[in-house]
Length: 101
Image (cartoon, rainbow, N blue to C red):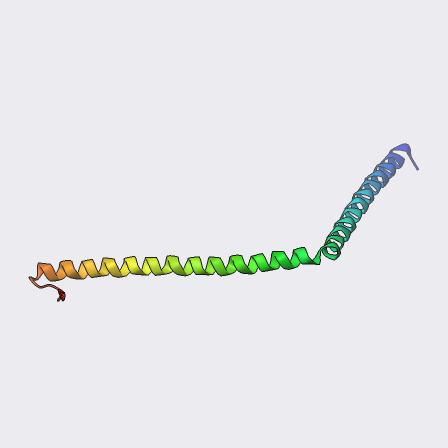
């Protein structure tokens, strides 16, 4: 083989070796992360339960808050429509019946 071909083969080999090292580092890192996750889950299962409980509570509060916001928006819509109907009736010389106590 000529020197030029030997250089290209060696360069290709170095690149492949570098890629293999990168893949090996990634695998080691991935395995380490999985190990850490399972270790933390085994160490403190009560923390997971507390976190799940707090998530359930937060979802319940968010649902309640969303309901309140939607009710307020609906109330505003009804009030706006009431005022619009009242204005249209006033233009025709009519009004809503309001019982006075």
